[in-house]
Amino acid sequence: MTDDYKYWLASGIFLHPKAFASSSFSYNFSIGDYFYKVGALGRGGLLGKGVGKDGLRFEEYDISIGRREMSEWFMSGYFAGISYINGKIKRGVEPEPFRTIGIQTQVYGLFRFADEFGFGISIYGNLNSIRSFYGGEILFTISNAK
Image 1 (cartoon, rainbow, N blue to C red):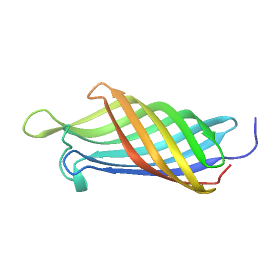
Image 2 (image 1 turned 90 degrees about the horizontal axis):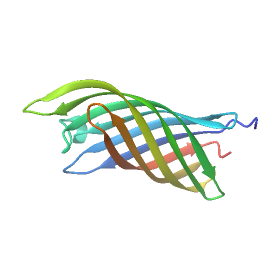
Image 3 (image 1 turned 45 degrees about the horizontal axis):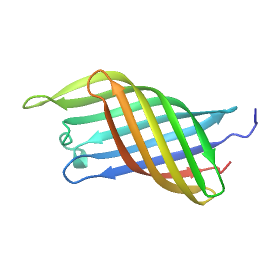
Image 4 (image 1 turned 180 degrees about the vertical axis):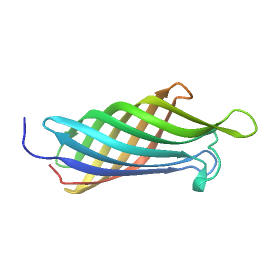
């Protein structure tokens, strides 16, 4: 067990003119030898309007546990945990509101161009009872570089 407190803030974004937009923010930290993530992800129509091409618009909030690997120039990891999803789904003419819980996963790879800053890609997914989904984002991080 180590006494060093490790953390990083991550923010991601993905824009597609015909499909959807997503943005995320998470606080990732260690307690002992374990890593945890508290995060939020929003996904749906562009500029906060409507639903995406897949008929979904939602906000997801998650608490996850995971692993992280770090070298001098790279950081990678994966997290899995539970999530709460509040959103709208288009099944007919008008989108219908829904709320559910799900199992959330995230895998990422980052290039650390300075000890405290990095960027890379993130792939996420969620298994739930309404409509499971997945996606990817460009991810930016700020960390204490431990």
